[in-house]
Length: 418
Image (cartoon, rainbow, N blue to C red; front, top):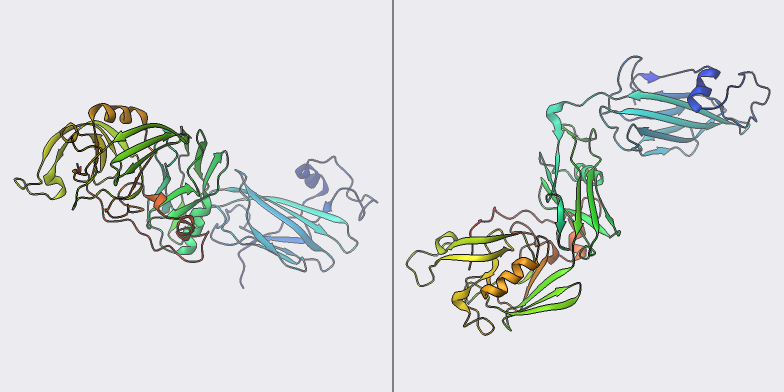
């Protein structure tokens, strides 16, 4: 195996002591090799790297070797300027250490090598080097979502990549660099929706009043031969009360809970035969005080018995294709007793106003006992919670041994259903 030019630095005793922040000692101290402080191991250790005055190629691994038969390497730490460690492996005989993770581009590294000579005396070598900048046209940018703010317990964290990443090993590099921390801590995971989008959620809903932060350590990291990680803006969310609205399409009622306690029960109507409301967990996407709903936007021809063109108030959206919880004063006679809508959950204007003012984006809206299809996990809002935890982890490049096979559904219509 050929090697890149090597950094071979022999430091004088004074220089070494300065690097280690220790008080000066004479090179010829009689206390060596049993000195309390490590001796200068510069002439025993060789580190791969750039030629003098050059920057290291981050594409090449870092390698540390012992050049003295009577000494061995006991430990190597390599960190960049922002504290990221380079993973590596040390051979059993202590003759060689090599990096097992890529170096970051455009970074400043400090390498600390600890050794032991044949008498057991400790040695030390410390050196620094810089890596070259990546091609700016190869930067893989990450955009976290949603916008900073306060959300409900069902809100997933999203990450959108500026370029597709298909290879599983490359996906693992990306995923390991995308960090989500919460207080209190939760068990959570990313899943790949498609080649450019990831979602992060906990195993259970976020704890009420949690603080959630997402950030990327991908900057400067090689992802593929053609992509290097770029900078990303971090994200901070707060989680509000645990609000859950459970709609029972069979009994035509919605029960709303705050932090596990029932706070309201509302008569509703859901989708009639042929337009049944989707079963499953949905997440509030947003709220619109007024929406004009037209049947032609969901493929119902004008003039048919099912056509409509209605002004709708207090509309809380739960799918991109147009499913809302909203005021439906035209169906108050059926609310609580029959399902007559085109897929939305309708209620009286006063109840819809209360619901509109109670919920926020990220809150849970769950439908049970409908004859409709199951809510899609992706592509039509946030159906993430309709996957059990085992299935969710299969979508991770680092949590599971096989990919999930899930992909983003065809772009959903932004048209309403009533």
